[in-house]
Length: 205
Image 1 (cartoon, rainbow, N blue to C red):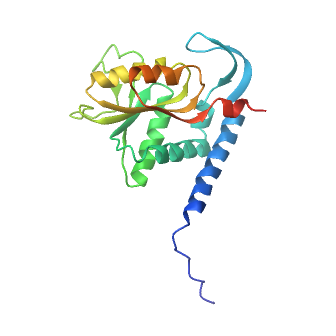
Image 2: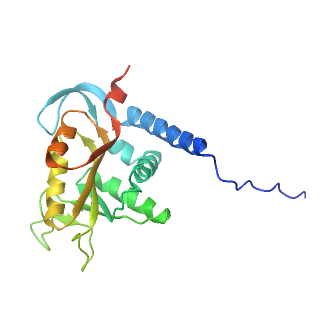
C-alpha cells in the first residue's frame, strides 16, 4: 500500500479564517430564518405588538444551530476576560450551557449559570442557579446572554440579580437584537451591549 501524502499543517491565512467565520454566520442565519423567524401579528414580552417574531428555541435546540450559536458567541466574547456566562431563564439556559461546554473544549473555560424569573419557594430559594456549594459570583466578570432582545427589560432583571450576587457585568450579548430600544436602555444603564444579528438582517426581502 502506498504511503499517505503528508497532511498540510501550515496555519491558515487570516483571510481564510475570516471566510470560515463569515460562512458560519451565513449558515446560522439560514437556520434561524428557517426554524426561528416568522411573520404575523404577535404581542411581545414587552407588551408591544409586532408583525414579525423570533422564537430561537428551535435553533438553540437544533444540533447544528446550537453548535454555530456557541461557536460564534464564543468567538465574539473570547477576548472579554470572562469568568461566567448566563442569563434569565429560559432563553439563556441552552445558550449558556453550550457556550460553557465549547469554552472547555477550546481551553478557555467560562462557567455557566442561569437566573430564575422567580426564586424557588422551597429548598435553598436561589435566584442564581448553577453554582456549587462554596462557589460565588462575588468579584467575577460576567456576560449576560439572551436569545432575543427587544427593549432590554428581561436582560436587566438578570443584570440586577447578578449584581446583587456581587458580580461585575462585562456586557450583555444577545443572539438577535430586534432594534426596538435595547441599545438605548443599556446605554442609559452604562452597560455595554452587543449582538450577533440585527432583526433588519432578516427583514430584508
